[in-house]
Image 1: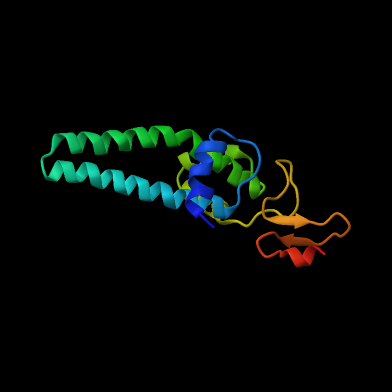
Image 2: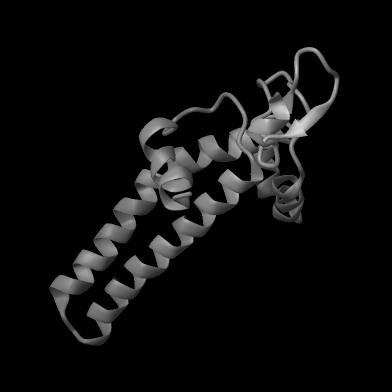
Length: 148
């Protein structure tokens, strides 16, 4: 599976400002990983231009870094909103980050497993509920033969 396409580029293309719905832990953490990698690469380009005293490289690196961060704000907030929805929390919980120890609470929320079955923000992207049974299956572990 192409994780870069699925969890990073797809968010910018298809879920840019989608605040409704739910997002799995996997989607959140892969997006965060690729976001950090992009920040480091662009920062290194700008830092290399600074170190080598190449103004065009410095301007290009830090300019692209600034543009990337500004473009990423809305998709990041939408993803955080969907991630909190998936663990059964309102997106307003994100505001807890502005009080002491709030980021630690958010980190715990981001690490929580998905609520099994549908909640008020939609069906679970992780767990599959068969119509004729009450059992819930993890969609990642579900094989086509299990449906027969």
